[in-house]
Structures are given as structure tokens and as C-alpha cells.
Length: 108
Image (cartoon, rainbow, N blue to C red; front, side, top):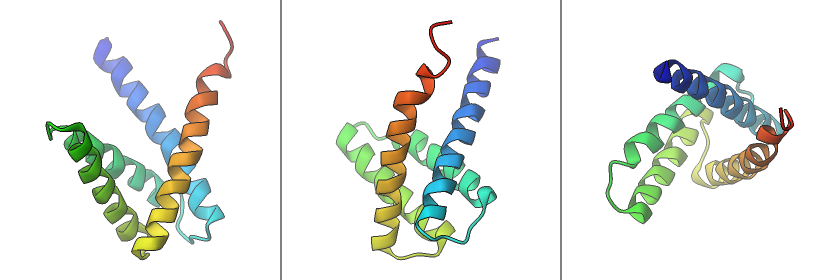
């Protein structure tokens, strides 16, 4: 049962992350679709899961951040500066969404 709940949580967070990536990249002028955004979200979650194998928190964050930028560069055919802007915007919007989304259902 725990595995089913974990899998469900993973897919919900994947869809929310994909939607955030899609909206941010559309706002920034990317011509890519929702499938690319979902694939980018999936690769990002794999990158961060693998990066936590590195024992140092700072080092794992640095490795994951660079890998995430490489993934954005690859999927959106862009340069380093635009990938950094996209990643910063995605992290900003994801932070807002993660703050407000869990509270939308109310105290039920």
C-alpha cells in the first residue's frame, strides 16, 4: 500500500512539475510542448535522486544543478544563460506553487 501511495505522489508531483515547466517555458518563448516539459520534469527528478548519492549536500546540489541545466539546454535547444534564466524562473514558480497548492484543499 505504501508503494502505491508513493507512486501516486510521484506521478502527481511529476504532472505539477511538468505543468510549471510548461507554463514557464511558454512564457519565456519556447516552442516546445507539454510532452517535452513532462520529460524534462522526469529527467530532473531522476537527476536529483541520483545526485543525493553524493555524500556532501553542497556537492550534490552543485552536481544536480549543473546536470539540470544540461537537461534544460538539451531539451530546449538553448544556451547556458537562457537555461539559467529558465531554471531560476522554474524554481521560483515551483516554490510559489509548492507553498500554496497543499493548502488549497483546506483543512478537510
